[in-house]
Amino acid sequence: MFGDIHAFSSFSVDDLTAAKRFYGDTLGLTIDEQPEGLGLQFPNGGRVFLYPKEDHVPATFTVLNFPVDDIEEAVEKLAGAGVTFERYPDTDGKGINRGMGPDIAWFKDPAGNFLSVLASG
Image (tube, rainbow, N blue to C red; front, side, top):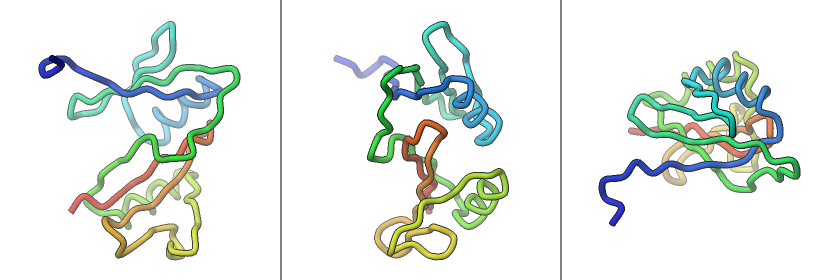
């Protein structure tokens, strides 16, 4: 039924300007501004739509994962760009959780939604 359509995911933010800066400038994604919100375009053809919501409540789960070849390098670059990684009892000093599945590090967008970088290999 849906085998040949291009599905996409979406989630809310509380400030489109801050979201545009973060996703476009900090993360380096291609942004497609639309009257209803922001489209994020990924090199593999994937899409995510961000929409403003006045009573936005941040997601308490990871809404977007970025698989990377080198998690150490990704964490260092993002931290250098001002991204703060979440710290939990099972993360190391850089905020990376190791050995419980793929290595993964969580961070939040300006609206408080959880994102991650995770080792793809």
